[in-house]
Length: 85
Image 1 (tube, one colour):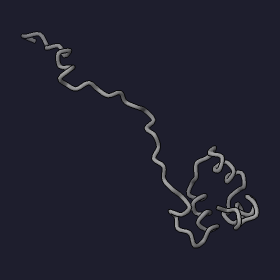
Image 2 (spheres, helix red, strand yellow):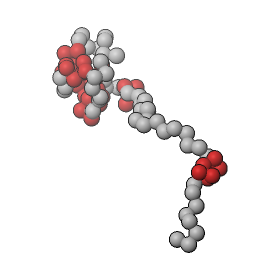
Image 3 (cartoon, rainbow, N blue to C red):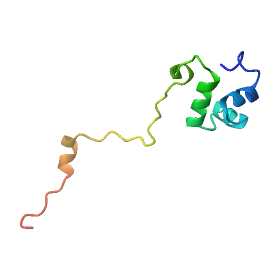
Image 4 (cartoon, rainbow, N blue to C red):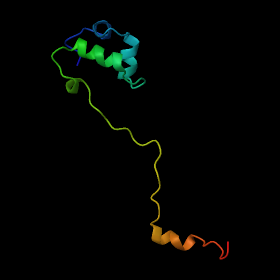
């Protein structure tokens, strides 16, 4: 999106108020965006809404849980406490 508005990443970085290396790492997926990056992008692209510049991708859960067996299948495996205890 910066092509046509800025000649290179250096001009974009200057307009955003951040370093070229930060922009490069974000573009390469090596760094997540932060508040300073978002504010800089909004300054560098006036006339665009936040939704025009960014979109949200839900993260995959860090842990995938196995499907638990229904209670009916496992209740036979539960041992009863001894009578009289």
